[in-house]
Length: 364
Image (cartoon, rainbow, N blue to C red; front, top):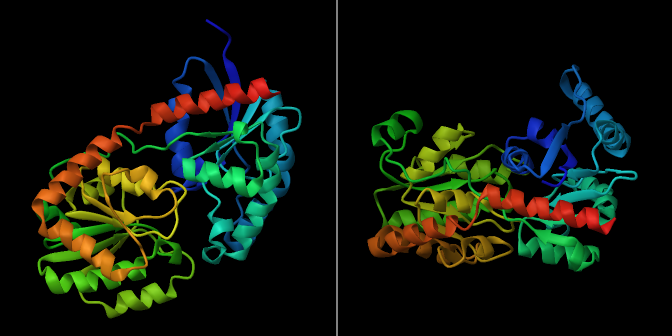
């Protein structure tokens, strides 16, 4: 057997972030560790014991002005690693070691109005690492195209490694009485899982549900996810709607699987995604999906979902109604989604990540 490739992986996001990049790192790392060809060392930015805004500021400064430009590469060399992998863009300087960076999207460039100025500034500060990386991993072919065209990176250096739904996302019987007692859900429901921020387009979904509610009486809309930035308009909308729209905030992993599995339909009318993992999670739970026809979402959904213009409220309402009123269509979408979800796995993602590591070593 050939010698193992020793890779230092930045696991900072897996420690501090429950969603998005943190979820990606948490799912990928154990699959990479299972590969005999790899030896992994996890490295992470130092945390501070300080509290409040000052403590948070100190932690950010130590991470972005110390750990990423200097500390990560020193620690990687000290561990004997031959390669550094950052699971998200960061202001990294890898020194003499080749660098692999995963880019989840360039939405901060293509849809800048949906990101705060500090977030856009952080991504700009991280562009040097992306452009200097020996290999870039993209979540989707859509993101790969953006990286090549918008950042001017040679297409030979950009590879795709699709994400996946964890195996715990699968069809299951759900106790309706438990749904009522735990979340106040009384009957059939449309589920949406998204941070409450403008890019997720929940205001349009609520408007579409208002039209749907006039056609389908025994249905509720259930929103799962925490508050994000610029959510004031959405919160005002939520206060004005009736009791057929329920907000659950963050839920546990087990609760999330049950909420998916119990839904009559999953709605994800986002205005832009680098991948769109909730769509895949819903499909893996055997739920018919209605999602947007933009960015990476058609790539993930394939032909197993109804795709709509997310800004067309009437079209969105009609798609939801079709699923709720047509049992044959709902069953066909549910079956197609289950089949589609089997094309994605974290083991496959790990193998494609290993391929990127090898390409990066050959490039040096």
